[in-house]
Image (cartoon, rainbow, N blue to C red):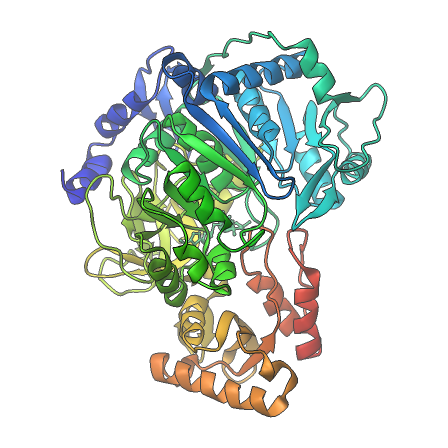
Length: 630
Ligand code: ATP
Ligand code: MG
């Protein structure tokens, strides 16, 4: 079937389309209604059906292929490599489920998971969904304050954690941060289950803290059957990256999510049972939920869980894993590729990557130099995909599993089946149906299966935040700005918050960044709009350089600034030319690697940068403050 027909059917014959996809998973009770959209914008998928995420990810494969690899754990931090077959994974998950039940966790309770990238984190997630409890994974790098606010939001019965994570060979102790977070939080968990990796001190609070290894010994033969839950039973909550402000707690269902992931593994990620998937993300992010833990396992694939940096012991470590485990699909982010790009591409060529069908990238705009570098270095197809924590799986990409189609540089691709993607004028609410018109990327309801049900405990915020921003319409706004070409390929221009309005011309930060990044000496760049008396706004650019001479040599800096402005003039015109291009050694980013443009903008306008709990390296913002004198 052509992709155009496949897509059209998903929109025009929605229920029949999704009923077919639903056959990719096991149901305990069949559903009676595919989609209940009687109370828009809320949608309920597969009404009347019961199923279980853990059953679909683990048990059904353990029953048919118990010996197959399921979880491949590799840590270049502790030099460990452990493989769990589906049978072994199921046994560990059942042990963990028994422990959680023993600690009082019941269906509908929340379990907060604050863990490094170790197998026990995946066991905990799967154990939760096995017994109908909701997991709330909090990225292991967050400090006490961020963790405390998430504890209060989730009100977990139990927290699962570990003594420490490790990054670049440096131990990051967790227990002190966790204890402090629990002290700061209003809600107090009854029990804390601690995995001791032997990396750091782990003082235990008597009566509250339990040792995982000791409890596991008591549950070696535990059998905990999957709890069959309604398709719309929530499986987990997860916070957005906090790039634009206070993170939003996304609530996901069970049946719709399982179907959406199973379908995406087939049509987008080209995954088959018995093959190996490698996503370099972290379980703390949505990519980790969908494409480290649930997606590959649901597809019957082995999934690699990697703890460590992409550059340690050397820049070829990921590719050595691809070769060793014959990885067929790999998923990473442009930010990680940019880290590798600073290294020698020869490292890549030492490994046999012939098993790899494609490298999928998502999370932020994939700039052309980065895309070209990695495509050349790998010699395999690079597939950009655009989505959000909220949606749980791609909105825009190329569905090569349906029909092979070319990628276009700078575009993640076309609307993915199930998503009725449209562009709107954000001021008038008019739908932009022509090609090459700039508008807000929005989705006509109902959102397809797998997307957020609501904001955790805040239906109002769900409706107000996502469904009320385009005048006169109830459509889901992605808050990203885009254009569509004649072939139906979308190009993301930046976030709606980041649109720069120079003397009446609206420019996406992305357009200007892309142009600046094409200068051979620019490794990375952030552009923000800054208030200006004369023009309304002007663009300001902050660039990280490959050759850093300009950082210390004022003349070289001026010369380079002029060169870069010329590049922008030539490519986009003088209106897009940044007022200044300044040079820094590092850009402020969230812990998931996204540029914190709103913080940069605030600093440039001498405003308070607001919620910075998700910032990776606060000194990056300080450099900008020092430069602009804020
Ligand atoms: P918050 O919503 O808390 O401000 P966030 O939007 O960064 O944070 P995520 O859900 O992790 O949280 O990121 C989704 C966003 O990332 C998208 O809305 C888009 O702006 C950007 N994005 C993701 N993938 C791509 C891509 N392939 N190309 C361009 N932008 C992308
Ligand atoms: Mg967002």
